[in-house]
Image (tube, rainbow, N blue to C red; front, side):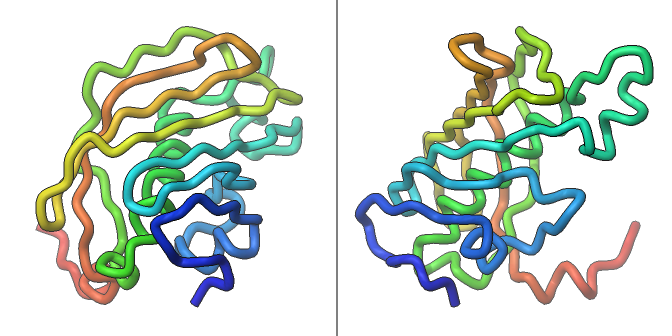
Amino acid sequence: MTTAAVSETKTVLDIQQIKELIPHRYPFLLVDRVTDLEAGKSAKGYKNLTANEPFFQGHFPFRAIMPGVLMVEALAQLACIAILMKEEYREKLGVFTGIDGFKFRAMVEPGDRLDMEVELLKIKGPVGKLKAIARVGDKVACEGEISFSMIDKEKVATMKRD
């Protein structure tokens, strides 16, 4: 269990505490730090991007740009962290059920810090929706809405492909 304070108040999580909450690991862990958090409601955090990120090697060889789908994934990971801080979801895993209205407005390159914000719009049982925005400096990199479902972790291991 994470050593961060588990409450309805704001807190900050470092990379080790993040790794205690979500199962993602390098090279797919896309949140370095949570800088503001209201459990089950909202979060702010960031990802520092270096030239060593594996996706920059092939996207694109002539100009490294972070893929838009990975920006959305980073936002989803931040959202999952916020939701998992609520005791009732602690042993769950957040999975995408949809993305709506995403706009990609600025390129994200090596050396950038991707600042992210997520805010829960609604959640009913295991299903919810949130708004998400990522920025580099004062420029919006992407924004949109993410739908998700919270499922039992052990179900993922035994799910069958249809």
